[in-house]
Image 1 (cartoon, rainbow, N blue to C red):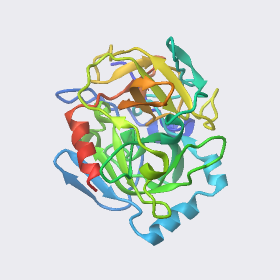
Image 2 (image 1 turned 135 degrees about the vertical axis):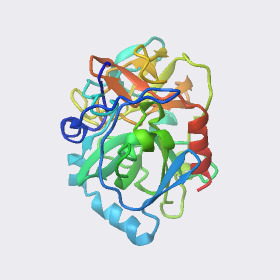
Image 3 (image 1 turned 90 degrees about the horizontal axis):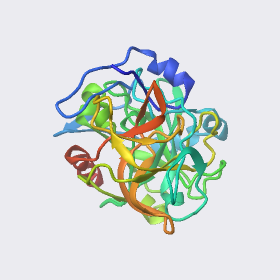
Length: 329
């Protein structure tokens, strides 16, 4: 079996937390690989095929999280990104993006638009270590929802993340819209039970900031389920390993294809973004003028023998159930 690597945030995670032997189990629909993280904070609940967890749902907890992320801690946080577990390593150089033609060498997004506000960096703690990921705000009933990779929320079968914070519109240390702490966290059942990479999706309901929902502040991208496979996409994120530094929004664009190894139900795109981009949105039907599209996947992993192809889970019925549960929280 071809080994894969998680897109966690960096060498520390890959050699440390991700250093365990890769998981190889598969489900009826997809293949899998593990993404180890560590101890959780509060008990999780299961609704059908969605598992949820209470995060900072009180004022004191919110203040604790906000106080935790000092500029120094944010700067020192390592990236979590695109490769699965011990089998998937995301240490590949940044992913590219294209507007008129595919780009495979990461490029800074300079066209502006909604995507610069809705996409942000995520800061989190797992097992006493601080990491970074990427995420996007999405349109939802509660106006508080963001979508990211499951391994940026929960360590597969292991612990939930703590100190989870979303910083939309991040750029070179600037936080124009502030920080939004996590209120509730949600992952798919297959991810929580067996770290199945085909379902490496997480959604987080955020606490309002100064009485305003994140969607009211930065807007939200559309999200779509059950779309035709193989549609070209633009993917965005904050890769933080060389040659990137995590300080700017980077993108890739081009056609997608099925997993050639048949280990997962994911689709892949030629893209060299590095760790830190995990959880970044894949937008189909993307309009470069408005910066809007429909999110149909998130950056999840790379295979160790092909660090120039990023894979993302297909948004089908299980992810739709995840969204329906999370937007009602």
